[in-house]
Length: 503
Image 1 (tube, helix red, strand yellow):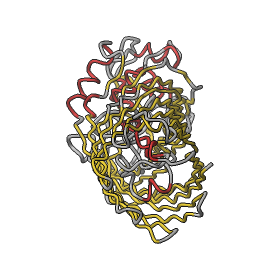
Image 2 (cartoon, helix red, strand yellow):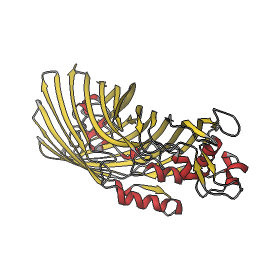
Image 3 (cartoon, helix red, strand yellow):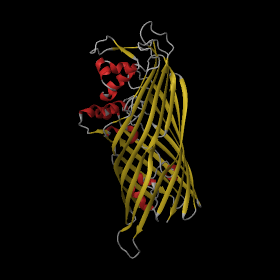
Image 4 (cartoon, helix red, strand yellow):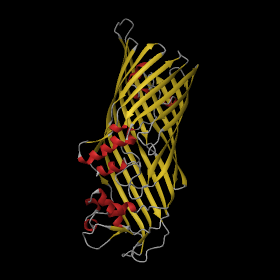
């Protein structure tokens, strides 16, 4: 079953595809980085690869924890707001979702050698940090009049070649994915067999073909991708700093996507006529994963730091649970039922594995004494190396070949600065991330800006940050038969507050 999910979810339409499929990227969404973490980190757009000294900075370069002077702890809360503007056949709609969340908590413990100790390894640090690396809470609503294609084409097209007896003699739970979709359409009179023999395998639509179909698509998503990080770093002669992380990932996502269609075209003279369709899908995805980080920072002179870090692929093991249902308004059908429906109980599918790409990050920071700093991070991630495993399984060969050909190496640039005025710190940042796709119309580049302020109380500090980013993408209502996409512009506006303490 999962092979159908993955084949459709990575399609070039970046669709909200029906079935055991999640949003625009069952695979890609777990591989794309988002700006999360502490307020100081977010206020500088995450440009911390050579800066360190922040709990979230260890996710970029694990050697950064060595720049803490004392034991240090941070807790962070954030308000996430996602605004989505959808354009579909000339109609523009808007939808918003806001979430309040405790998205980070962690601590670093610092151990220094005494002045009498001549060991060149002068300091070590160990830490534990939890972050929500992705907050998936989102709401997208699209609506408009499609002059060409009906949603019902999805069911009619997928049914072609399936014998009628399969749809009448078996239950939904005994069927393959394609057969299940055909079952839902047949059970609600969306299509009819061209002849009444059990071995018939061709069908015609009961939906008027005159066009001008009013269509809606509502997508509601909740959930997160969390990461628990164990960190270790060490300092050699206060010039070379090395570090590593072990990361444990947690995935819990629930998505409801609903497609509705109505038409006022004249009914057929004989047989059924479908004037309304409602197609509901509810998908739960849960699982866990593992990754690691390695990093180094060099300080050739006191004011300059140079960093290089590697983030391994993340190996996710996921399980999907899907519930589907279709209801229609059917005029003149043979059973006399004007509102047939076919809603099924949830199905839990076998676990599957996703391997996201690794990432390299190079960093440069210039420290202006105690007055502030400027920092730049440049990261490279080859999304074409994304894999579904076992990769030699015949079910996944075509999928992996597609990702290898359609996805590309993407560059991410983060620039951040901080300026201190006594106890007050002012921060700003810029972020640009290339699309994972060779053709970025499907899922566009991201541009973001951040700002922040902090106040140092001596033994503790309070930081506040605001971040904004924007990305365009395409979203189709269904995966086949009707692939006219809505154009989605997503705007994220987030406010983050962190409290940190030396102990």
